Image: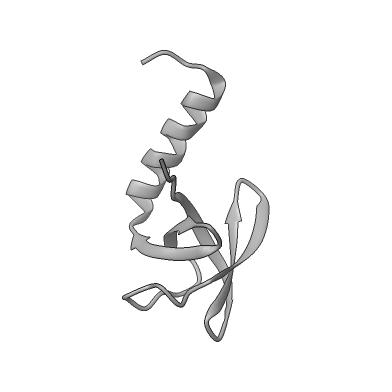
Amino acid sequence: MCLAVPSKIVAMQDQMATIDLSGIRQEISLLLLPEPVACGDYVLVHAGFAIHKIDEAAAMETLNLLQEMANGDEY
């Protein structure tokens, strides 16, 4: 199973971006994205590549669910 994690773009240069996920920053490629993105946008990241742009509400919902699973909260 593969997991793509929502992350916020905080900087961009050419086809590369810096993302932030809970204070951890990483450089990723934007080459696989079918749509344009800008700083402040959220993208799904898998294996160092942004694969899809998502809206902030969907990103927050997914990040909250991942946090609940990490904490062992029951559903």
